[in-house]
Length: 211
Image 1: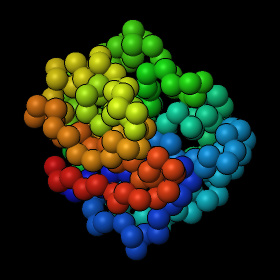
Image 2: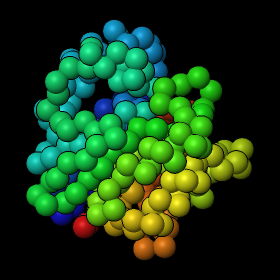
Image 3: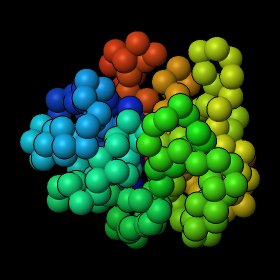
Image 4: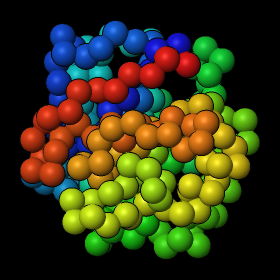
């Protein structure tokens, strides 16, 4: 199965002609525009612009999580529209036998959404089943795809520990735009698939991984 990974779109949606061929599109959060963080605006954008974009995507499965800019998913989940994708928030799904688990949380980062301290994060990661093959996140694990432009590592140490325990084939994350790229955490491939750079300009192509 060919996985296509993207995160941190921030409302900037590439046309289908720019997307790699694949079987499953994995979206690692921060989907909504930065221009307006109100839940009502985000719900409307999801139901209109984002819906139309999803409908053009050439993939059999589209699976996503929210990110720290996607306030509507945490503050007003009742407003989130029913979209042509599978949204994961501390739960899993199967795509042609491939087990995917998704979670939007990250270490405390200003006053954005889905913030938890490390003890709270450890409890969230404990919910991840041992037998999953793909872990879809917003925040990266500590030491892998988490280096900021200031040279600070801001990932979750308890997430790194949990990945080492369960050894999924693939981890997809984003959140830290300058850390875009592929990393190896022992036998696990970690993709920081941030689409935009530090200035929120679309710069980085989607990343592809074959399971």
